[in-house]
Length: 297
Ligand code: GDP
Image (cartoon, rainbow, N blue to C red; front, side, top):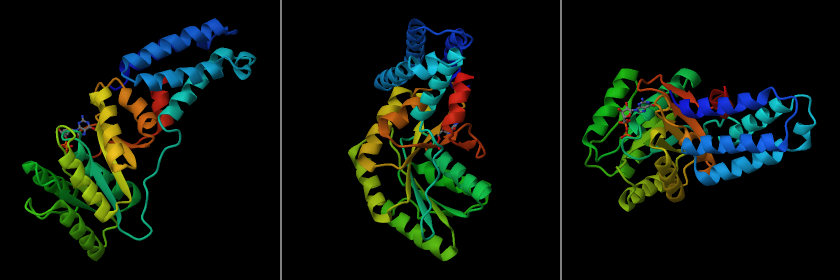
């Protein structure tokens, strides 16, 4: 399960301070040091850790904590609030176009879980919001990608738009939106191509799709198991494509948690959803507060 090591360490640190009737500055310093080490070990970006620890220290030695009746618990409350803020604070909702269809473009590296997530998101929109999405196969390079999406569409009993792999992805996306209008699909989810590594050709293509269809959301799909790499990938994609949100996949694995805890701070883009397994139902809205509680126990 994700965050296991981090949760264990933080919960151990917290136990030491929770019951204290009096908390000294020294106690706070010690706790901050342990929290810092635990976060670094969990692969949280070091600058993110530094800022977070400074805020925690500043607040935890403040009057409101030191003079409260339960200072130990107040310190933990500060840590919980700061972790929640770090992951985005309020849960972030999906944008909706003024006029249907709402267009969502999925981007990310190959293997991050883009195609799977396209299906999961469509399933989520239908189940939770009673929507009727059209899935669009715009990854024309990976031979199996179109089939994979078509199979997902069959499983979900949902339409998939494809034009094979000889047509420019920009044209595919445009035609798909026309079809969605004609067929009254209120969401269009475009599965784009990925690569093993970021390259200019890929970015050019994604920028072209983005500028011609002007999606309401551009979701970056990031594999949370890839640690610091996930942060770097998110940073570059965001720089070049100005993404509107992040979907973290594979949170069911034994990820140390660094990506979940750093991405919002590094990109300033909210984590909107989390993939928590291989099945189409293994998908949830990302709640920073719940995630902080999961980590802190
Ligand atoms: P793409 O190349 O980005 O389109 O990636 P795929 O959608 O093909 O996914 C790559 C692999 O990751 C597949 O084996 C998926 O089943 C798996 N995968 C995707 N999301 C999750 C997730 O949230 N949890 C787990 N455990 N596996 C996932």
